Image 1 (cartoon, rainbow, N blue to C red):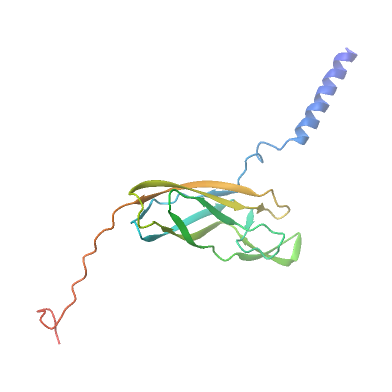
Image 2 (cartoon, rainbow, N blue to C red):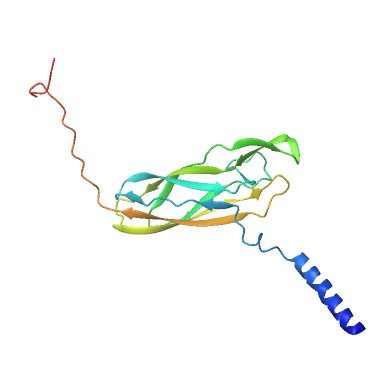
Length: 184
């Protein structure tokens, strides 16, 4: 009986030690940020079109902006894996919100919280083949709460780009002196 009690106690202690050394399932794989769906983008060969990437930081957390105020802070960045000669250009990150936190109330940090939008341009080369392509993106960031920062994360996301023939624009009629619609 004493041996059985010792084995049960040892098992309980070992289980507790093992569990203490493991991340809780709630923390494992936690992203802190979600990417909202990107509407399909349509562009013609040799043209460019705007695209917006919207991200949502989980309530109670913040991430460093793209231009944090300290060298030791990890900036938020977008990276892309693009098909063919397609390019994403003119990435414009929003300005970070200057906030102070209980761990150092005298120091302001440039952060994103809630929803934030990054703007860019999709550029299709002149010789681009027509069709729909999937672009793979990745948001690199470091999330923090009011007490601690967590290891840097990478959030993958995708969106589609349809390269289609240019739509011929019909020029607007410009009135001239012979036009019956000119009124002086």
